[in-house]
Image (cartoon, rainbow, N blue to C red):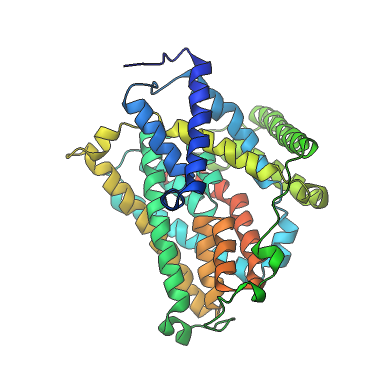
Length: 402
């Protein structure tokens, strides 16, 4: 069988890029691909290549992706996270989102307490999924890379996360159409709001796809690299001033490169909102770079150990339960507390959607249900999750590890 040695970085990197591109193409080309999602497909392709021996489980090319491309991807995805705009436009949806975030953290603590003896690195799993279920995949990647979580657990978490997330979305859509929920909760829209496109803002429903511009692309990457460089310089300075001590959570967070990249990105996005909002290349490029990292995450995964009977084979099952507990806690907590705070049903389900699925899924739900006034707040709430997900995930990991 053809095997690529770990030293052949060019061939390995070519397969990483080609495999990621194939995953994105399958997601957009086929219905089943859209159901699985590009990150899961990329993971599966990587697992096949590594478990058949074609690609090695570890190689310097993989380290390059995590060490250099992820710090560039984070600011690319945060260039529109204007904190002032988020606070001004989201209204009560932001309150609901914060309630859902608290539910996620409570779920992480509960899942850790119940399953800490059944999965490896339970405090890291709790922190990673806290970041993911408050922010999104960008925060999942940042915390998993920052905590050096094992590749097998991380790749299994992604698969479990996507399946649980899909189930949660089905529940959310059922809730907004349920007569019982609509009778007991305040609602902003009538039951038949998923009307044809005439009821929606056409620009929100069908945004024009911008033509790729070289200047736009280079400016986006230049800003992202500059933000990463500034964050690294700040990290070196703080590391000399604030020497982290064992058990000192706050100093560890203050010198964490991903927290600093997030902070500098938010500052830039808030101080220069207008020019940054015009950049069209930042989000797709950042997403692609994250997908490259997720492909690399799937390479160390031993598929046979995931599905064999016995202790190792139970890992996948326990991670499914872990993710289920956290997603259920998110939804139950925001539903109960949201009811007590007299929040609308739309705000409650969109908050849970935005926290677990991120900005795109929240906007998609608002559009599909005809909630035109909630499309932008849903997007902004998801961006707010991107901003706070990484530090909260690292905080949970540090706290539970104590």
